[in-house]
Image (cartoon, rainbow, N blue to C red; front, side):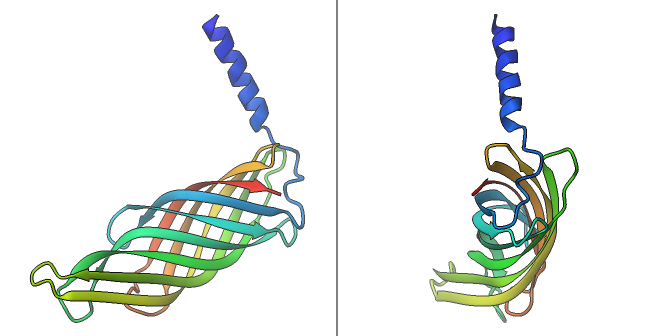
Length: 186
């Protein structure tokens, strides 16, 4: 009896996740979601998370705004030997260029964006308790790609990889992030 119930629940779950033919790629739709994942390239793999909102200009162009919080990336105070981890965040806008895979609920996309990377750190040097304060806001570009999966209930998932390139400032190292997110489409 248990295998029969498990099979029934599995079939119902698959039916729930099946998507509409393609009405999800409509002009004016709004998607709001959150995500989590890992950043890499600056010093080591680290967790990160954030949220985004997008409004479809048409079925291919999806302008968006995004906030990402990075709990800590190793930094070096200029002209010293002081090293520390500092949290920072990214606020940026950009464009997802969507495509459609016929007969599926998948939409691959390319992404390009521009925004600001902001860090704010106050602490003390461990050796002599000298105060350290560090604030920096740097412009950055980013690009990458991903894949969206739409369900029939206006809910979906996305998988994305993105590379950031700060354009100036103390933190000039190229780094990236990979994420899995969810969204709701209005």
